[in-house]
Length: 285
Length: 220
Image (cartoon, rainbow over all chains, first blue to last red):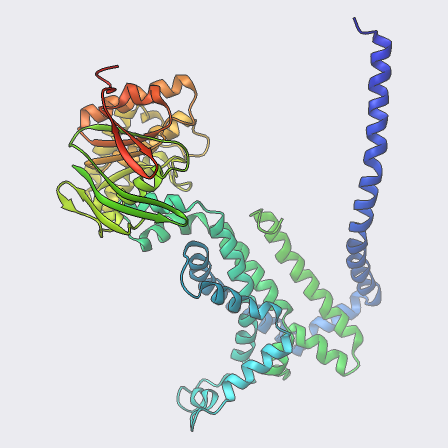
């Protein structure tokens, strides 16, 4: 028979040992992790301390900032919707099929993510103004279609879409990777074409991923600055979005207004991230 | 009814060479073999989900080798069942019928008939989440049989079930196939399961399908 005292001593010893061995682990892990969290909190706190409620109110009452806010909401929403419209079929194809050139397409889709934003804007500008013989895309859009793009609001949306779509494609691909393809196979044996299997089986399962992809695309579009500056310019009341407002306010020495707009963008980003977390898709948590 | 004529299938490094066998109408055939020998690959080729390199697949006397899965009229129950997560039990049973443009009354009649036959009438309104293994198996069977296919393919349908449910589903399978006259090809590792169900037993060895003789259900 085991002596109860000896057993209790052993249990206590084991407990102590485990506490001693786990504590340094948690200290090191949380210490390293908190560095980054602290940095973000300090950045936000500094912004909040720098500006006052009066400054914030004065800034957001400016007609040019209100115009930038409206264009931001509109352009981000259109860019996000366009992104999900493209990302859903592209993500599905990349997830489900092995075809020649798949790796190349997969790499091309990622280029906007790794490319410096200014380069992307410059590339868009060159694309629209590159003469092909006597023909030029921007001239054709302006003169024949009567829909000029460069340095106008459509350029803002196109610049935002170019980057945000890449993030939406990644999200949709992961979404479809997580959906069992065998259900679509079974649907095909039951009488579905591939198209019907996609629309009736895969798509209804991907709604959380679609909302997540749209939200990520919207958030990316909100933060876009470089390509917009180069391709759409930063003309007040015309092509100005909140990210360019920060730049314009800084360039005329209005630091308070710049910080106020920054905080407004932080609030918008937080709302988007809360929505994303609330959806709990497992893609971002 | 089902005939494989010198079929070659390649799946990555894996290769099945010159496979020939036939199963007559209404027979219950069991295909056995060790894991990774290509049993599922044969089922997938038969229902058109995997293309073959050469040979012919004949079903109901027609060469269906190049037909898409939708046209082969085969009921398929994969190993993981692959139920549709956004569908209710009832929607599973009526899916193939809706695709074929049946009238609402006909669909309702067939769904009720199937549900009664499978003992899942009380589950019709339920979503598939939360169904037990046996209940899920019955739903998958109902979905596969809903459009009255002439061929039923079962990929290890009893492997994930406890012994009591396994026996229940095993009896159900025998009753269903006897009543409907569907030609069945059933994959299993389990020799007892094969003995209890099979009219004919095939074995896959070294990339070849060979019929086992003298061990039919009647004999055992």
